[in-house]
Length: 129
Image (tube, rainbow, N blue to C red):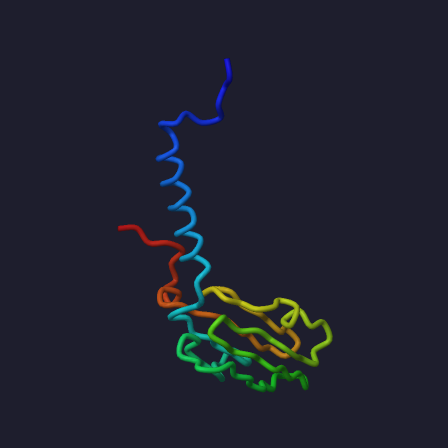
């Protein structure tokens, strides 16, 4: 007697689950619509841009403390530190940040690049209804 991995009656359920997984992945991987890139220097906001409204990628030069400067690239996909002269370059190695709540921090220059979404202005981890 041959044993099958799935019963023929289970295939519709498996197809629905697989389709739901594909839809969920497609929606969760979409670009940062409604996401705002914010650059802070010493705790003060020096730049704020809505990423969804950018027609073309933008490059902005930011001067920080202790002689540190960085080049920030903003696009519809997200934001990243493309170039910096700080000693550790941790902010540059962070790469492209695409989701609200992510950040790239330059400690020597006291510069923070972060993405803020529609609901990240609140100080909550989650909401229930």
